[in-house]
Image (cartoon, rainbow, N blue to C red; front, side, top):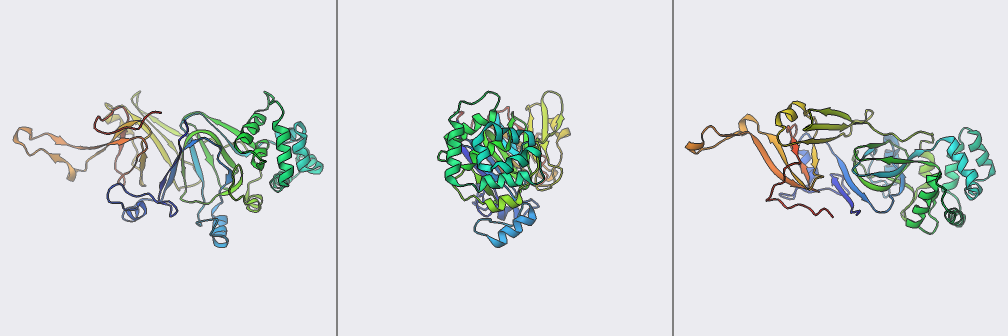
Length: 371
């Protein structure tokens, strides 16, 4: 059952507040060495719009020229980690596939025109940009008629894009040009744990599934379809990377200590805005986790994805608590524990030496329902 979206971070358009005291995360970060961050949990019911995000140079220009649409001057690379099976679109298909679709669906070819179809078939320089820009600018009535004709046919088993177009038209009826983007963009499938890296100026859309996103702290989006919102076709046509490339599946680095303890880190190697670590240990594997866990140089927000669990960290020497009762002398508390519930976001001190146990369910803390 899809739930919608849960955003967390300190972007000015949607700042989170600390549960205790109501202070904004932005203000709290100003007193620490933490970095700005923006993340989300997406549970997708309807496909999210075809879109791209600008690089830094373009973001600065767009924000300067049109601050009503582009809210900040920052770039927005992002990653999407699959929590369930996921289907989406990312980047442009190989030349041979685009050309084949123009022949398979003559209505698509008619929208583009014979000359552009020929250029696609011959892989002429600039043909992809010309074709996609022509599609985005096509007359709305002609687009609607082409979609109606295409989706009225029974889908061929060998053409996943056709079935996807039929589903997208069901979700966005009336001739949304984004439905036809399935014939230009790669369809991407991920299983839980896989990660899609979305670089600047890369067209993409999310179709179904649950994912966790992490991104640079920006709200800049250029849309091109599957949405009633404003579609900035001119910016898309000028800014997209018009290259045939497969989707960038980001492989995590794994560290494992036996069967009870492991961590995976998703870290794009060409940006330093963020990385994401997924960790799990059984409650008995304290030493193994401490031996394995890196000390992160930036603020680590921790999102609880299990029904409930416990966050724990070692106490500094000055924090160690010794029982004042004579019979308990020598009993030292060297670990600080607090319960968390699924859906909570816990902001942790710098280099806290945190470890997470999801195998323990505290009876005193409410959990969210599973359905």
